Every structure is written in structure tokens, then in C-alpha cells.
Image 1: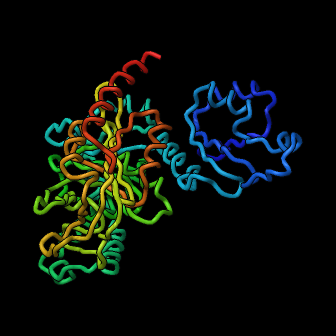
Image 2: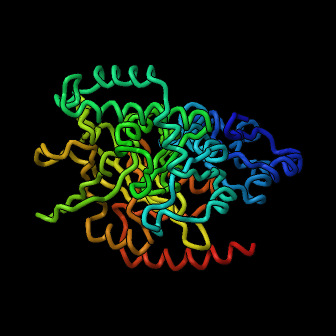
Image 3: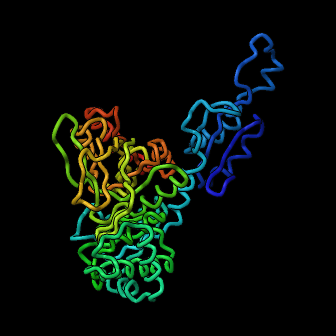
Length: 430
């Protein structure tokens, strides 16, 4: 047993019933090791003594009873004791259970309501807590902003010094600059917001452009830096995306590539391969709308994913966008694999975080499939997690997952939507 999951490597075929009581109440993710010690068979020496002393552990009746007959959702890793035949199993026991454990204890602070009553950023918070575990607490922006702006002077001074050290600060924001007050206000907001989240035990949060009473400017640099420290964030009151950002960030711990709140902003339709330019004003990765710029580029050519879910959102490191959506009767995790690329031209007048990608399998199919599945505009963009991590997480959580990748064809995708609709309606009665 690990802190966040259970690993089973069965060695015996006896007394399988002893597992029933414990596994019937199991809430932790299960990692099933389908392995044997030897890699190759000594064909010429095999006799019945060898057969009885070298059984494949997972095929023993004990495992079949507790896993198959009980219908437990589990991750299976196949191979030998020293290696495995499925390369995807390397971190199977790490990121997925940790993400599920984080979802069960996560608290999200929703500062203000959803912006202009945007439907896709709303959802059933009680159902989200029942299904995924995380809770969402609402705060009026007036109360929150009072706590932000009343922070002590010392933390603000420390943050300003950190900005000067870490970033290439624009001239107008330096000590004698005409807009120095803007950077001071950004530091005050960050210091107060950090104190607010820490005191409440929140690891994810939202705000809304429409309701920032008492705050003189958008908390752009604060949001970026908090996300860099592992916090989840969703703009316009999008608590589902905020939770998913946090969960995916935790699952990506120690892996190369980043994970960030994102939105499809505009398209380049020139040429045979249209491009998507993603950003979210000043609230995506590393750069600040207030003028403090990171000294190095965050854009590299890689594979990626974007994710959307009826209840959550998430990104991936090889190039993905993801989103969780609430469909009225269930949650859905929607994943689109993309190829992230460097900007084909300079963007001197866009000093904010951005990402550029080619969606798979192609732009028209990806757009049509995304809309057919009810994908909204906020996503999580990740260059760290591969698709299988999200597939496993959805399996652990018991939520629907739809994948848009290089193999997607619209006729099959629409059929999958119809089949899923029937299945999940029937499953509610089981």
C-alpha cells in the first residue's frame, strides 16, 4: 500500500476470498503488476516442476477473483520482474494516484461569480465534490480585495526585489519609471493573494474580469507566479479548469515541460496547416501584462495536448489541451493532442504568455470534434503529461473521456458520442 494507491503483485493461487472484504471498500487506485521473474523460457528444460514453480502471478485465481470478478478499475503493467513490455507503465504508480488523492482534498477559492453569466464556466459544485472530491468556496471580491490590499509593506518590498532579480523589467516600471506604481500594485496584490490562499488552505482559485471591486488592476503577474508555484487557476470564475490545472500540475511533478491555464484565442488560417495562437491575456504562463518580462522564452517545439472537461480542465507536456465539462448528467474529460511549435514570426507587441500549436489530426477535424463534444473555450495546456496519464485518471475517477488525436475520424467520433450517451445513462441505474 502506498500513500495514494495500492500495488498488487500476486504470488499465490490460494484463498482468494480473503481479498473480498477489503477490496469491496477500496477507494484508492489499484496498480496491477502482470509480471513474471524470467524473461525467456528455457524450452528444452521445461517440465511440470518448472511449470508449478514459475506461474505468471497475475493470472493466478486469487488475482482474477479480486480484480475481474469484483470489477475494480485498475492500471495493469505487463512485463518481467526487471523490465516491462509497456513503456507507459513507468510512472503508472506515481502521477495518477497522486492526482486522484489531490482531487479528494483540494479546496478551490472562487473569488467573484462567473463573468457575465458565462454558462461553460458554471457547473454543479456538489456533484463535482461527490464525483471528484474537490470543494469550491465562494468569496465576494470586495472582501477578498480588502485582504489583498491590506498586506504589510515588507512582503511587497521583498516581491519587488524578486521581480527585479528574476525579470527583465521594462524601463517605465523601474524605480524612477513613470508607471512604477503599477508594479508596486502588482506586488501588493500578489502578497495579499498568497496570504489569502495560504490562510484558507486553497491550492486553486479563480477570479473574474467583471468583478474585481477594490483592485486597481488585473492580478496578472500574481496569477502567473502562483501557477508557477503549483497553484491551479481559472479565469472568469472557471472553477472546473482551476481544479484541473492544479491536479495536472501535481501529476506532472518532476517531469519536463509545463502546464498552464490556456484559451484558444485566434487562428492563422494561411497555408495548408492552420495554427492556433493560445493565451489568456496576462494569466497564462511566465509573462506579465504589467510589463515585467521573463528573460527567456517559454516556447519550444514539442508534442502537446489541450484538455477540456465538463467538470475540469487540464494541459499536457508533449502538447495537449484538456477540459472537463459538465453535461447535465455527468462529467466529461476532453483531450486534444496538438503539436506545439515556435512562433513562425516575431511577436514584439504581444508581451504575454502564449502558445502556438497545430491540432491533431488536422485543424478542421479537431475544431469540429471539439465542438461536437461540447468543449468550451478554457483549457489546460501541458507539455509534461502524455495522453495515457489522462486516460488513467479518468478511469480512476470514473468519468467519461474523449480523445481527439491523430487517429480521430468524425464519423467514428460522432458514433462514440452516441454510444457514450447510452452507456452513461444506463450506468447511472446500475
